[in-house]
Length: 256
Ligand code: T3D
Image (cartoon, rainbow, N blue to C red; front, side, top):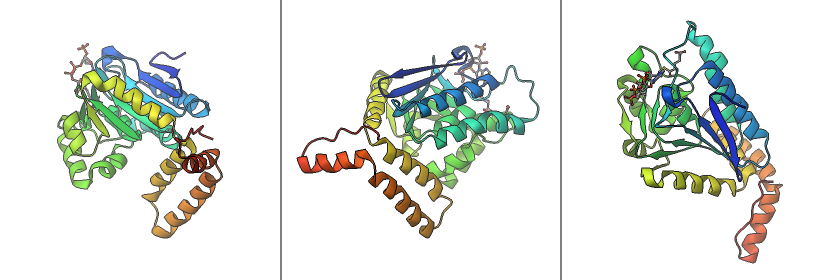
C-alpha cells in the first residue's frame, strides 16, 4: 500500500496516480520512493504492457514540495530521490504515458518529459518553474527538453519559465496529443490499450536503443539495430505478425 500515490492495474495497463491533491501532487521523499516501487512493480508484472502516470485532483504535479522540506543539499535530494525515479522510468522496457490532467510544474514537468508519450488535457499547462525559485531544471529536464523541442526553445522555456498551454505544448512537439477535457480520459485509456496490445518486446527495444542513439555514432547504432532485430526476430510476436500478414488478418500480439 502506498501513501502518496495510488497504484492499480486495469486490464494490461498499470495506472500510477500521484495522490497529494491539496499540494497539487508535489513531490516528497516518500513519493520518490513510492514512485520507484510502483514503477518496479509495473515492470516485473508480465501482465502489464503499458503504464499511465497521472495526477489526482486538478494538477498533474507541482514539482518539489516547497512547504515542508528540511533538506539543504539539493544535489543529494536529486541523487537519492528524483534520479532513481527517472532512471527507473527510462529503463523500464514498456511504454509509459504521462496523462497530464492539469499543471505540470518544475520536477512535475520533468516527470512528464521522462515518459515516452504525453497526452495533455486542455486543462493542462507546463511551467519550467525552477527559475522562479532561483533553481535550474532537474530530474532529466535538461536532457529531455532540448531533445523534444530543440535547443533554442528549451533555453526560452527554461530561462523565462512562462506557463505554456496544452495547445502550445502540442505546437512545440512537447506532447503527443492535446485533447478536450471531455475526451481526455477516454483518449488516455484508448491510447494505453492500443500500446498494451502491441508487440511489447519490440517497443521496449525501440525505447532502449532510441535512448542510446543520442550518445552513439552511426556504426554503433547500426550494431544496436542488429542486436535489437535479432531479439525481436526471435519473439513470438514477430511470428504472429508474419502469420497474420500471410493470413490477411489482424495480429494478436501477446508481448512475448
Ligand atoms: O529539493 C529541491 O527543492 C530541489 C528540487 C527541485 C525540483 C523542483 O521541482 S523546483 C520547482 C518547485 N515547484 C514550483 O516552484 C511550483 C510551485 N507552485 C506554483 O508555482 C503554483 O502552485 C502552480 C503554478 C503549480 C499552480 O498555481 P495555482 O494558482 O493553480 O495554484 P496555487 O494556488 O498556487 O496552489 C494551490 C495549493 O497548492 C496552494 O496551497 P494552499 O494555499 O491552497 O494551502 C499551494 O501552496 C500548494 N502548492 C502548489 N505547488 C506547491 C504547493 N505546495 C507545496 N509545494 C509545491 N510545489
